[in-house]
Image 1 (cartoon, rainbow, N blue to C red):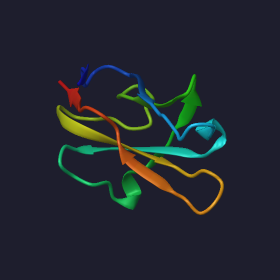
Image 2: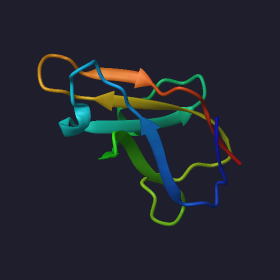
Image 3: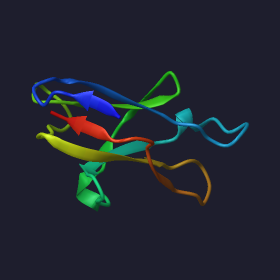
Length: 98
């Protein structure tokens, strides 16, 4: 579980592991952060960036892509590699914003 104060602005890094021999870092990546036990709506997806094999997104009140209030959140990741697949997965663990 990651713990981030609601007043903090920082990058959230989500490790991504693709199939053996497949480099996903050239594929578009999006992240949705939703209240725990919820599924993301289309409007909740945000563009993310690849950094050292992990997806990252800036969250927080000072210029973050989104600002979260206190609560427990589930993080979702969507990768769109070349071909027919569009992969959507829950990240492991929860995000606790205090």
